[in-house]
Amino acid sequence: MSKISPDKLMISSDFYSVQGEGRSTGVPSYFIRLGLCNLTCGFSRAFGNQLLKDKSLEDGEIFKGDLELEGKATWTCDSTSQWLWRGEDKDFQYLIDQWKEQGIYEHIKNGTIHIIWTGGEPTIKGHQEAIVNFHKYWINKEVVDGFALAAEDNYDTTKAHFTLPIKKYSEIETNGTIYIEDDLFKILDQINCSPKLTNSGMTEKQRIKPEAIKRIMEHNNYQFKFVISTEDDVKELFRDFVEPFNIPLKNVICMPGLDSQTDFHERTQFCLEMGKKYKFTALTRLHISAWDKTLNV
Image (cartoon, rainbow, N blue to C red; front, top):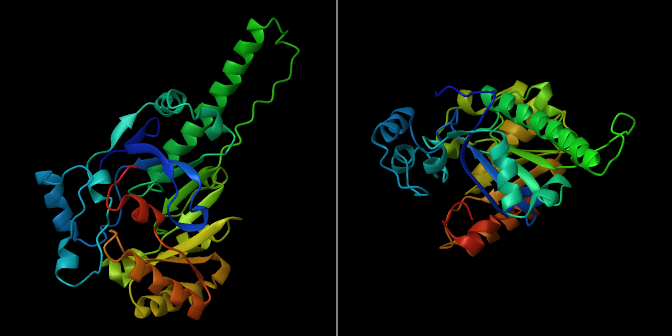
């Protein structure tokens, strides 16, 4: 795994869009996709290493991994081409400049536009440190810039008391296999955990980390978001997650396993029917309805 600097953000892509999944569906959001992941849903580690070696995927390409092709998984991570090798270290100022250039800085600062930390896996230790350090940098910059503006307006900055709050709204999208440390935990406004089922092709030991799951449930705003393709998937998520961890059904969200518009309506209907039967929140993947397989829109 590549070295992650705590003083940079390893960004593979970042873009302004609308949240298409989970509790915040429909909310204007800025996605920051960080590089690397500790899981390889739909493909084996050896297959992924070969992809790394060959760099044979086109940017944004959707493909089927070897585990899916062999029937050991029913889906393959649709963002692999983004996080597998495309992480590029960016200075913290990069994001602030992007937001200002796009005219959305104030909306991000006041929480109207959500910040979505995603991946890959953004809770990898180096990423956790980098996100926290970015947040500190952002706050410090706001304070310094605020004093500079006050000085220009001839305020006595030695006597003035400035409160320049950043009322941002930060979501993080995680697979729930890595413990979220205190420094990051306390600055997150929402945790979107997508635990992986057998249909991912990952082993139980890879997929289920009790300490990480219990940590997420300590937050005051979390959701467990599952991808389901069959009723057996629903039974599995109850058996392996909901029941052993006592996850309240109000915190359980399911969406259909789909990555194209081809069977969007049929798969969405299936998910809604399962929601009625098992009493969890059933949603769909709204961005697929709008943009099909296109990434970063």
